[in-house]
Image 1: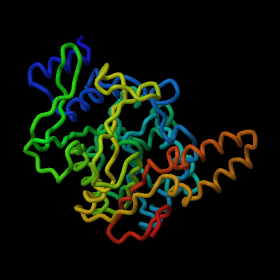
Image 2: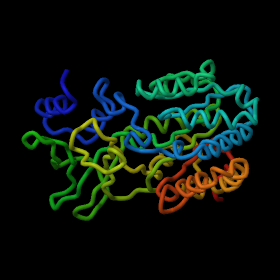
Image 3: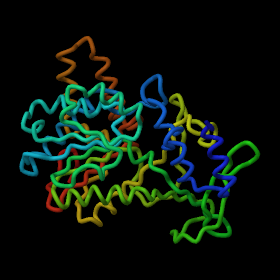
Image 4: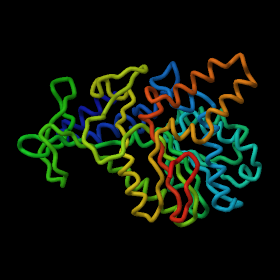
Length: 353
């Protein structure tokens, strides 16, 4: 069986330099060789750690938010509880645990985990086996019935969707492609006819075409049936210029073009673009808010105090988790939260007016 590097070389030899979006898509999602198809990338033994793996407090706060949104739309007797890219299932498990305070919420919610990785799906099924009867797995949101209110979480999902990159040169805008330089991969610039905004020479513009169908589908479901979606990721409120394409391996930055398929490839999320797509479908958007502000407004400090009182021997652990999740120098500012809701939705908790 060829390696992913051999597969990409053959692809470039046949088609010429390929867009960065194709390179990312193949590296992360190739059916048999892709990064997410072949491993569990999370935790100290993996390449990166997400907020749910930092502490149970993160999932508990999001669970309380979802319960509040369920009550705000009239406590429907049936709704779809969906997570996009659920990792090991830790966040979903924490949400279900805190939701025991509202048995009717648990009874009404039909769980759906949207996952493409066989390795991660196995981890999720093992962790959530006690809830197996009420959870279904699918590879796309389209496989979830469009017949009831939607409560959706997407934590560090959009950053891994493929991007295209454009560079402003003295001759005009060029697309940054991936080509070959002997046995190695290299960046190649190719003039483009794409309609792009004015930019100074040297400016880099990133687009993420796959955002649109996903965001508009989420917003359209919420417009039709009610509900809310919470999108949490690292990024900015654009439009803005900048090169944010990166690779992470072993919790350190790596060369995105070296050893394809062995590192996580991501780029920052443009929350302004996501909000504009949701509004095109008639949805209302709140935020983005910094993750630290959002969690603090939801009551994270109170929850830390409760846990510390109940488990004083773990006080340092809870304090460290609070710092990691909310401090501006850590995840508090670069990670942002966007809420998509129905047109007449009131201000949700966690967001400022």
